[in-house]
Amino acid sequence: MSRFFSKRFSSLEAYVPGEQPQDMQYIKLNTNESPYPPPQAVIDCLNADEGEKLRLYSDPECSRLRKKIAKHFGTDSRRVFVGNGSDEVLGFFFMGFCDSTHPVAFPDITYGFYKVFADLYALERKIIPLDDNLSVNPDDYIGLGMNVVIANPNAPTGMCISLTDIERIAESNPGNVVLIDEAYVDFGGESAVALTERYDNLLVVQTFSKSRSMAGSRLGFAIGNEALIADMETLRYSTNPYNVNRITLKCGEIAMESGDYFAENCRLIAETRDNTAKRLAEMGFTLTDSKANFLFTAHPDYSGEMLYLELKRRGILVRHFSAPRISEYLRITVGTPADMDSLCEALEDIMKNGIK
Ligand SMILES: *Cc1c(COP(=O)(O)O)cnc(C)c1O
Image 1 (cartoon, rainbow, N blue to C red):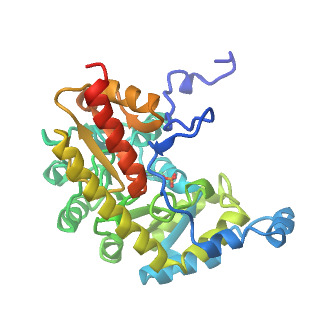
Image 2: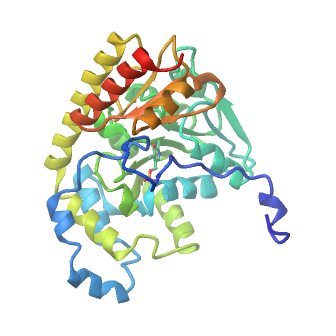
């Protein structure tokens, strides 16, 4: 740390992204990217013509993309906010709606960035433990009188709460914003986007990074009440009005025309997930009921850290968290069926030959 860094941030623990190793080719099952490429039309738009236009700023209003997202969800583009990855969108929520009179509540085991944002903006927060079976108990969020952030499906467990519960949470916290992070909703969850028409305090966030195969393009969005979206726009124009670059905007617009392609990929990933879950269960693993594009799993006889390291030695990267309640678990992104065959074979090999 330099001697110039503000004391405000001197103890800030930054978010630690999953490894992106450059040393060798791994089967990469650690950051929940899609194993399938973006639609061909998206790839084809990355041409010299678009390259030439890089001298020009992007459209600060992201009008065409917002219209396409609005059309897809059957809503108005004034209810759509677009950001540089959903991480940026989440950041605006913490920056803009949380303060000393509006503390923020979220689960103890969830997307690690929520705590980082709460620290960054020095927010009061209530960390609510998951149940013993690692699920979110919706009753814990009823009438809290705080802003609420819930990933649905949750990460890294993949488990869902129902739309009825989301309604109860929004309805019982009318003076606060309830943010539902739907990064993984397309793999088997139910979206709360339609509920945002009825609850002016409900904000739903989605991303192009997982189900839409575009993690590298950095594109996310929020849908909610027009006034909430206008507030986020105020913050965006006060920080970085050109937050979404030209190429990403273009790719996003084309991607929004490829709903069938994405739906088929999601179906395939969900099928691969469920088949892999069965095989792991047969090997003695316990699993949460994941509706996401990853599995969350532990084995009674092998430590999570040991499995992570042994898989890495065999060229397969998965995610291991050292946090107390989940240190025996692995989060394994669902890859292609061939990737998952390699994973299962490596695990069988570890169980036969690995160090216990
Ligand atoms: C991956 C992920 C995000 C971040 O997505 P980006 O759009 O790539 O910034 C947000 N929330 C959750 C729960 C995620 O897992």
